[in-house]
Image (cartoon, rainbow, N blue to C red; front, side, top):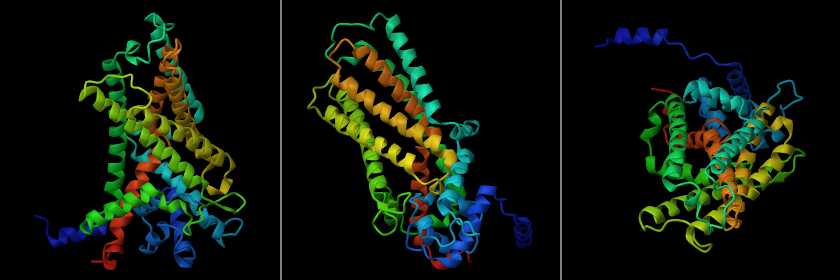
Length: 388
């Protein structure tokens, strides 16, 4: 049993984890912002900042993932470059977010992929997998065929597809789940969960699903490079996210049809799986196209330029998944169906393989940060500041 003297000795020997250069920069700008507080109403970052007297490693990682990189604070800041204080909250936070993904990645050695997951790697993986599947179809003698009325399973058996994509999907869930669990363990000290679990979860879910903090804190949206407000980034994010969810829903409904109703594909155009997939696919064309356009036009001070390849790789791959899927739907009753199916499956597999080590991670870690913020706001003030 530990005595009071033993515990006191351990406390005296305890040392905070050292900050990296990127984390130290966030801590520096947060100290300046905590003294100024002009941006206090802009987003969740600044109220969370005011609940702290100093910024340890866990605090910095939490605040960085709470930031939505809308850019409003940069355009409003009187200490932003070229001021000698060089306060650039969005850029500092973006660099730490990438460090967070690398640090908490599972398996850890694969965390290095976050720094290499650019458009070239994503497209190369897609092309490689697509060519492999096209070659497999060619060797089976099914490359050029009479119209099959959209029967994909005549090309790739259902059980083969279920095993292939089931393994990749489960690995993606495991990799992201382990990473965000490690992140939560480090940024949450256990007291967060003591207050209003249901209300906190509902609030964080609403903020994530509505992208509340992409409104610039005033409802007018993010700042363009010329300082104008725009809601375009929020709207394109919504098209992308809800398009993805509709496509996922289409897959889930088709699975239920197959196993519960014994109704295998293909399904008619006005069936629920096809309608969900079509609407979702259109959203996944418009959303990524808009996000890529905005990404190309963003001011260099509004984020981390080193991460643009990762951002664009994710966006381009999403667009390719949707484009090949819609082409496959439109031409599924033609002799080109086998080739289109192989290309689309290559795109989908490349997308899921890169999900745990690319831009998709920001949504997972940001949801965890929003949940911590919702719990934290409900703590008594003396606990927020670490008092006994």
